[in-house]
Image (cartoon, rainbow over all chains, first blue to last red; front, side, top):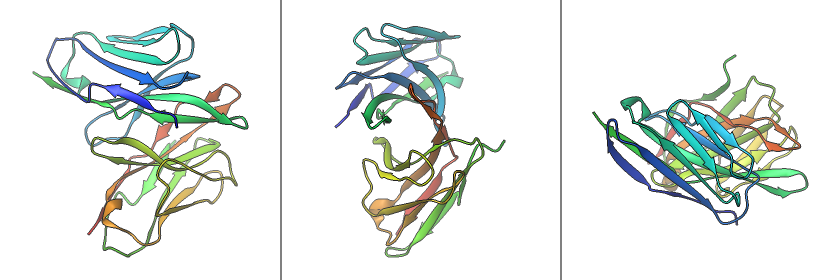
Length: 114
Length: 115
């Protein structure tokens, strides 16, 4: 079935350093979504990428969707303590009869050392 | 708007007991989902309901049943709880269209411990 692999599983950075998490799918995706979950909280939607090669920015966050629509990345510039949490990618694929399936990666847990 | 609400927030069960987790959304979304989250395993889909009146199995449906009571409410039932069902359970909802699913909105979660 559909698989979405996300690396690394954990990342510890010094405040001010950059951070990147990568997402790879075994099949071509219709789109990819990114979510953030703060410790003890619930996942919150960040962004959706739809087009091949698409790049979107939200302040210090840069999201990319690969040309083949099978991989994606999230890059945070100059991390802050407010960036702490787990970042999930989720790939969307058609599952037949007009319906879609969203498959989550296992997430990258980011720790920021002040 | 409350968004997605879940009850209870915490629950402790003994092995073999049953319980129902409740979920409601006030965003008029067609699709609703139940996930479980275990350390290092990410979010795994248990069941989903693409629209009112339909339910389908996800990745890990064994030991669970669901009911889409109406467009707002989607409940998850554990008939005979097992320690392997100790987890955090999230309900989510989303709109859907010809282009696929839109973003999912998650509830605050239910932390379930089965002893």
